[in-house]
Structure formats: structure tokens, C-alpha cells
Image 1 (cartoon, rainbow, N blue to C red):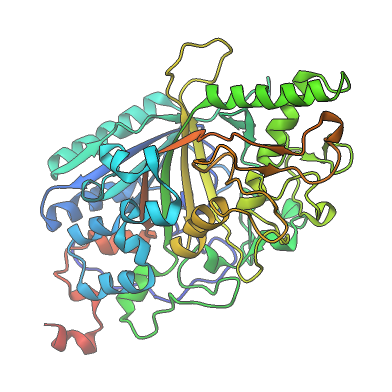
Image 2 (image 1 turned 90 degrees about the vertical axis):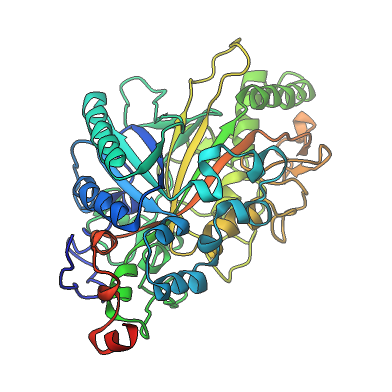
Length: 499
């Protein structure tokens, strides 16, 4: 592909469809229920890889403002080593090394110290496709039509073979499922929880198909963020804009403008162990209540306390311990300041404090979450050894300040914030080494069941692999695919020095 004139490197206006050059996966929850992630390794020359990207680019899905996209949705993100394989100029790589150090180092290097991935979740136990030097890019194909997706995968496979790109398709296929007859729009995950309920608003963007204008007006202030929390080149919630790159050439600014960092994370889930733990703790509550709480209700209450909400998404009333509110409505913890409903150590309160006092208020840590479960749904009495889990895909502007802080600090921190008296980690997302660690249940609502804390939490999840990725815009992907021998990356006034 020959060099083309550059488009403006300044951020677009935040109205209308001016985000339509951003890959759709970044700003919109996929409507398609199935997903296949392909792990790529570039074995050819930089020129061959650029030709591969040029041919692939016509299939990549953009237009996040489109309320009703049709057909399969294809997305692509690159690791730092993938960008190195494309022979990007050193000045571009140096920007990433300075402003995105974790992306530069790679997930396998950071995982143990920054994500809490130890023991069986440590990077040396990850699947081979996620190893540091094995992964250059990830293609994600979301679809509903198996025939259409199969044809598109065949095209990608032919392109890859023709340009020396190796494809690892061993990541299991994900598929969202519904547990409510007649409600296919509901999405559930393993462990028996409804998914996709949290809403993240973006200041100034009026065409978000995930949040219609009427619903956007109902969002709490704490749930609305500046574009710079997710797209490079805009101010974040604190007003900082490290990706303005004023001293860089226009082409470098254009490449990074409104790109996003993504994290693909495969987590295996031990549902038999989780279900056994629910029953064990519920039995103690039922016995201690002397018949006022039956075991089935106690199981749902234990499940709710670990997550922070009931399985269907309704919140836990701090006084009655019964479900309250609608599953999809936005909320904060102003009415549950003591953690009597949602415990301070619960999963959703750790992952999104919503302005509460369980974590310092110096920095919010929003993420755009796109995920799908894989493997068969759990059945009572099933054979042991069934593989299932979650394929998480998360987007942000800073892997260090957002994703790694959530996993390495808020999920693994014990206790969690000033008001949490327990010393257990995140019950659903962390590796638990201490069987005596205490997950404290504030308040006296469960006293009649004789339970004020949970102990014996087990590692219900195991990391199978994590990838740190950069998702360029359509303009950025065009730059990656352009055969320009480095000339397009510098301004004309710098070209003599560059050459």
C-alpha cells in the first residue's frame, strides 16, 4: 500500500458520528453472542505483515455510533512485540516505552507482581499462545451466524498463510447465554451471575448505542467519565492528557489519536469448587437460623454477598438482606455506607467503588468491559474436569493506572480500604492462599444465622493467559499497513535529519 496524505492528528469533535473511526469493540458491547479470539504471530518480513494488514483492514469493524450493526464483527489489537515486528520507527516505540511501560514490557512480565497471578496462575503456566514472544496480535470475531463467521475465518486464514502469519486458534470459543426463557438479550456467566449490567457513560458522546439518551440521563455522576479514560489524546477525569504528544510529528500524533489499550484475559473457573463453597457456608447459616432461613435462600445470599449483588443483578437491601432495585439501574453506595448490604470486600465493590469510602478517592479506575463465558454451563452431578471460564476483554487508556491497579491493588489488597476489617482478597477474581483469611460481613442482619464472616475461600479462578494490546483507529491501521519506508512518520521539516 503506497503512502497517502495524513489526516488531521487532532482529536475529533465529541458529537455526531465522529468516533466512527474507532474500532467498534472499544466503545460498544458486541450484540453478537459468540466470539472467537485468534492469536497471531508475524513470521514474515515487515513488508509481508503490512500487506496482510492492508488486506485484512477491509474486514475490521468500526462505526460505534451504528445502533444496529449487522453481520460478524472483526477487531484487531497489537502487542508491543507485534508493533516491533512491523518495524515501526524507534521514535514511535519510544513513546510507548515512556507512556505505556506495562504495554511495552508485556503481560507475562507484569502479571505476577502487577496482577496477582501466582501459583497455577503464574505466566509460566499460561497457554503457549500467550507467551511473550509468541504473540504479536489478536483478532476477535464476534458473530451470531456460524456460516458467515466460518467464511470470514477462512478468508483470514488464507490471508495469513499467504503472508507468513501464524494463527493459534486454541483459545476456546466464547458464547453468551441466557437463563431466562424469552429474554435472549440477558447475558449470564458461570458461577450463576447475570453479566453486562454496569453502565459507563462518556462525556460528550451522544451516539452511544449501549446507553440511549434517556438512560444516559439516569446515570450517576460517578459513572460518567471523560473520553481520555478510554481513548488516547483526550483529557482524563483528572484533566491530564499525556497522549497529546505536542512535541511529536503529526504522523505520530495521528497514529495514537483515539486509539485504545485492550487487555484480553482468559480465566478458567472451578465451578464445582465454587458451588461446594456456597453450599457449605449456606448450611451453616441455615443451621444457625434454627429454621428461619432455608438452605436454598442461604445459598443465594452467600452468592450475593461474595459478588455484592444477587445473581440476577438486583442489589442487597442493607436492612432486610432481600433483593432491591432493578437489575440494570445505575447506583452508588450512599445508602449502604456501612457495607451491610454489599460487603466492602465483595467483588463489584472492589472493582467499582462508585465513590464509596473503601478506596482512596484520588483516582477512579473505569474500564470498558467486553466478555463472554466459554464451556458448558454447570449441571448438578456433572462429570469432573469440564473446562469452562471467562474470556474477558477490557479497554482503557492506561493499563497501569486502570487495569493493573484494579487487579493488583483493589482485588488483591487486604484489607480493602479503611472500612474493611477482613483480610481476604477478591472472592471471585483472586488467588486465595490463606484458608483462615476472613471475608467480613458488616452489620447484624446475618447474626440470626450465626455468621459474621466467611473463611476458607479457595482459588475459584485460574489465569490461562493475558495479552496487553493496542487497538488503533482506522487511520492508525492504515498507517501500520502503509509501505512508506518510515517517511510518513516524520514531518517534512524533520525529514532531512531523519534520512
